Image (cartoon, rainbow, N blue to C red; front, side, top):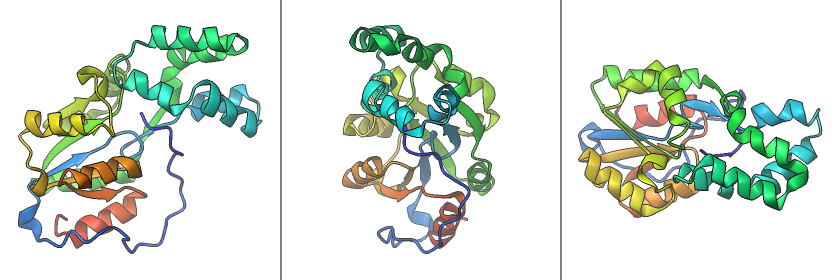
Length: 227
């Protein structure tokens, strides 16, 4: 899952800077959404901030150099937690206990749904739009999310990177999603909070929106005629 900063409460000014999708409601036949950072608040800082006792610089060093995003992405792509953690512990033995918490304390990284964004997806659902999800998430921890978040049942299918052993922004996971879900890129809208994933989606022919805040997402969907 993405370790980009958690979405805050400050609302940006609405006024999309996205490329014009320039279509009517009939051109979008399905909506494909990311989960972490869009619908679910996941951030390792929730776990580690209290442990670093307010030393933000030390925590960010740990999350950048000791347990960096690319290392977490390996687990999102199917690498076992135990294997990945043991490797980092050998490299950074002074931090062995903190590294171990990436597995044993993982549930503390997962907080509440991003409620306003879930309401937007509910509005899409009530309008009858086909909903799918494509998420970078370990197969070991995704069952926790399934059990915790009832709204995940709204999706016709959820492609989980850890289950298919591929992770965004690899174009192959998008192509696998098209095939598995029966999606045509030209008639599918994709939403993600990570800009690189959005860029790859556009390169593959998807209409794509960079998620910044639920209010902006709602405005963009209204502009496209989906709400």
